[in-house]
Length: 222
Image (cartoon, rainbow, N blue to C red; front, side, top):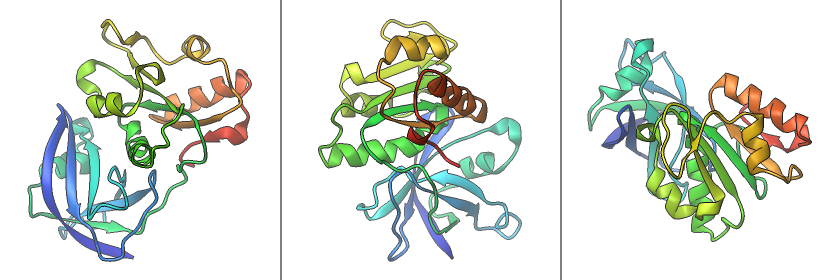
């Protein structure tokens, strides 16, 4: 089913990421970690849908998406970033296979953090952050989405921020390769939630399996 929803607010998150607050259709519900197909409500664009993950909680009155622009693609993200408050998007019913099963390790790259934002927000709201951990890779500190909020949700020992193109005290330097995983993890008998660029997803999943994680413990968008 398709729903027309109006943009209520737009905020910059990083130099190439914006947060969009939208009207929530009556009765619309989703699970943290789920996504939906989104199109711009214009005649020449309405058939061009792209998947975006909800970053708001189901319990709040509006919908929120955090969307990174890829101007080099000259595609939908570039056009969405040009929209203004009052413009309309078309969303569909929610879908997705990334949902919280139990305590574990979240591994994200860049905009792949978006499904985990909603999940971590819900866990925090419910007082269930417990020993969940987040490994989050970005190019530079300027690319980190919602860093301050993540630091508020997770204790320092459970949050590892990795930079691939900068060196800063307090941040891991380099890619999240096998050496990184072995350095930061000893227990592979737990859940692993993985979301990032396709190449990173494939590499991380293979590394985890090679180090002893069960394929059934790997939770990612199929």
